[in-house]
Image 1: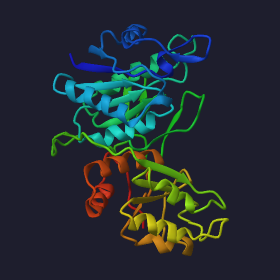
Image 2 (image 1 turned 60 degrees about the vertical axis):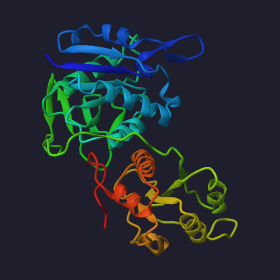
Image 3 (image 1 turned 90 degrees about the vertical axis):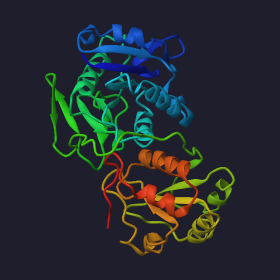
Length: 337
């Protein structure tokens, strides 16, 4: 019988009402005991590194979860992480970079309603996550939620209340779980064993996401320079950057100052699907071939945050950062034109 490590971190799935709103209170053991159907599926070990609302999840907490997995890696066949939905996409992306080419599945799940709610989705999500983690073809980091398995770098929380909370952005879901069966799409494949699992132990959390709005002052980049090593610019459309802010200051000059100072600029789009192509319009083309500007292509903002933190955690050399950033990890990117 396979052995799975259940890692409880809090979230809605563990929450109860205490008079001040929902907050995590149930332990991992209590959550497992709430789903008697899982008792015969596998040997289940439970560990609880934290019990927090995922709104309070920080990069340092990603490292704590990573450390739990590394410590238990040799003794377990897979891992299921119980996590709040609000930042689950960020954690799934981060773990995709911190633990690469894992032949053992690392599955994140949670719920939209607490385990104690009579209409909860928690029991089915936990049960299906274990089914997926136990399947011989499962590997790498994924989210299993609402009967769908999504690559850890492609998930985004799309709905705040519905049970199908997550979508897979710019990449098909890995699989669907129906009637206790794993139905795969055929694209994800199986782990070939060509590369051993790789663990990374450093990230740089000094990454900021700046969503452009009409008239925003380019001087905000100068204001951020002392506190951050990288900025992810969410541009308009397929890759439009204003020439000037309402102040009349040049965006191009502000962006190039940031790059010339040795900091990292990543460009992506605010549009949820289909990605970025800086070469289409004049308002983006000036940045298309600049060696100091990284293109987010079709990656989600959540994944770009995690990947940029990971890349800067490995090197400060611009060429090496670029190489790491453009490497493909867990289906995270399809290069654009």
